[in-house]
Image 1: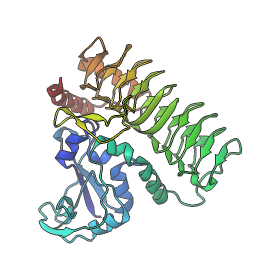
Image 2: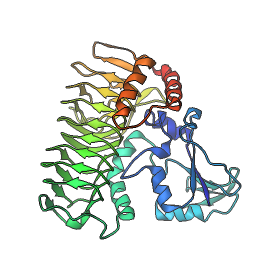
Image 3: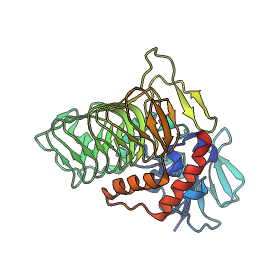
Image 4: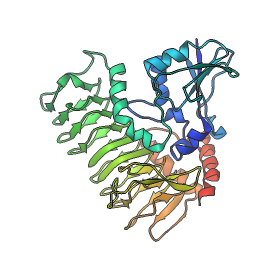
Length: 387
């Protein structure tokens, strides 16, 4: 079987912090599935990881490589043309784009360039995750959904547009909802539930075992990752997995990691009052950099929490393990393992962090392992540079 390693470009990985503190770039979800899962659907093989951070290797293991192993840059978005070019590589060849950037190689020491002149789509900045999400939902839908495999849409629902663009997986429940497919398809994963009164506009993905609460308003280009629970108003949001925004409140143009909780009434701005372009915190430069965007909301690292009625300024970045509560707007960047409000922040002890993580993960029957603890200790050490 073909061995395939999804590797991190270190500079890309740095730009995608805090999401890449806890996962390789290829494990980021955009569309219905992760970047690595897109490659798995195009090229069969035995997959492994080569994360840029050594501490991730225990949770995201490699495969034993050989001279024929394919190495694929984890930030690339797979499509049929690019996958064909990768599989066509001969041993010792590497695939580059027209600028000379290496996309893939066959063999660890491949140095004979083969140029790919097709379009290459990439996740290189945090905002790429939500900006490309609508397009990727459509692309994943076309690849994953087979005609005739959907459940019949219940007559309790109102479908606006083409009913064939509503896909409801086995074990999912959708009752009394408004489903609008005029701008794109709606994907409902296995075991997911969409409760009555919800309003969903495609392109949209509600992944396996996710829950959309009663009366939720979900706008296009939104992905509700596996085991997430949402309510209120969401617009162009990508929730990775296992996170909750279960109550009223607005979230738009946002990326939410795993094991996050956003309390009732939380609101995150995605547009500045003066309509000026947005600056976003960038870890490698330790500065707020211009994005050229007009819309950008909350970026929330794994295991971060926001108490009820928390308000976030446009383009706020929270690291890993942040706990925010109280009134007022916190600053636009909060380092990992910080707790507090506009009155000030203190460090979160690892003992307290692990206690909270264990309790939250146990609710989804997931164990916080010793390997996870070692990972978070390494993240804590790396994050000290930003406090």
